[in-house]
Image (cartoon, rainbow, N blue to C red; front, side, top):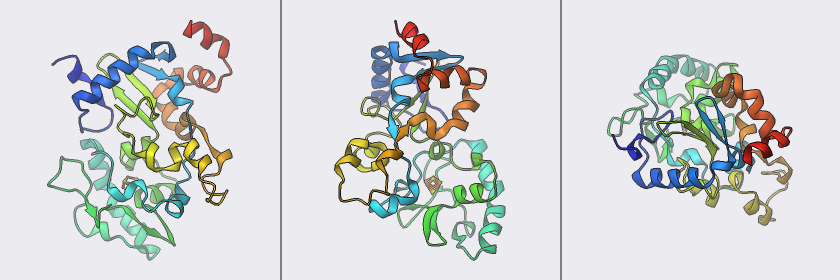
Length: 258
Ligand code: SF4
């Protein structure tokens, strides 16, 4: 296998294109000084400090379509598909008890015409995107959140945003979607161009919005939106990396960055 073909997005069988791999490789070379080595991971400090506001509850209020309405972003790996299949009866029971729709329990949630692990679309929306008590959102996420369960059952890529994980064969790049990473990130440039969550500058220009929706003061670094995952991945290195990302350890970072 060539060096380029070793690159892959972690947590999905969907491949990176050669072009994405090329851009990723170039980016990593160009930004070497901003990368922190932590075990198997290369931590992209600049990208992870980029500001986001995942005000998902207000997404539909300000955008015509949320990111789930075009479908699930990436297929899941076989072990996650099996986990979701196992959990569906419990999720359906929970929804039935509340009088919420469980239309996805009536037939397989997988789209057999697509690569394995791809969720079915219904009316161009991910099969799990639905109304619950007047709010629109992800049925799997709502179930995990309301029952205090693990979010593992929610498709990995859906949980990952705005972060990204790319296995280069030599290390795993831990980054986030930014203007610079968009050419190779699994998230592409859609979020930056269309959604306020990923673009503080667009939000600052949107003076017509209610100030409570995607509130400007609510933007915070990418890594803080997914601390449990960051800590799970980095294990013993997590504390050191968080200190660097928070800027508490700027002396050590400057020494590292040379
Ligand atoms: S599984 Fe949930 S978060 Fe992922 S696309 Fe579907 S509705 Fe959205």
